[in-house]
Length: 249
Ligand code: PEP
Picture (cartoon, rainbow, N blue to C red):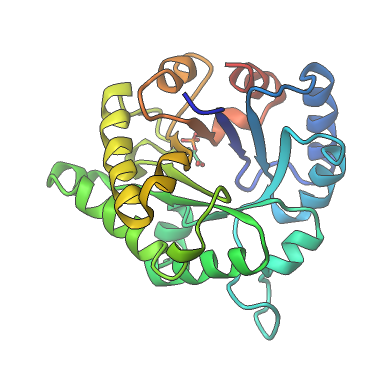
């Protein structure tokens, strides 16, 4: 198995004050580990807090939940990849299902965000996943393959160790429903094969994380599944106690 990646997506939780308390509590109980990588995606206003707290930790990285594809300009409320990097981000989350389904983000926009992240020399984690309707219609493989190929359509020639993929079935996010370890493995295997078709054997090195109602009870089983190289965790990552358990899985 690859060195696992455990990623916390705080969504719109933990502003700077709560983030500082969280990081103090978490890092006090989580000494450096060489056998895994932790990524914390706080809200953008808490990015510098998390980045400062992890400045001397190579195994714990700060990330940003979203960026705009332009470097700067008249885009009120947006944050560019170079700005995120300047604030301490090491990784960009792209195409999270809440961005796609609440804010209407398209595959084409995800592709531009992948380019922007690469240009800024930031790692990025592209999220893919099907809705319940798509799953019931037997469309899962077609949907995740399309999201992967279109998302990476302009960066395939740049891809290196700085790419991560997260498979997050939309029906499993924040619902308490989780894909079985077998279902997650099956889709990860499809994604792995697509990656290898796109970029050859380098595709074998790219971590593919599972996300969707991961908690302290199911994390170990999912992480042990073939082709599951890590976990992307929303709700159960917001409090230090549950996150600490998952980070140590
Ligand atoms: C997520 O936000 O990426 C996620 C998987 O959320 P949750 O763990 O709450 O389902």
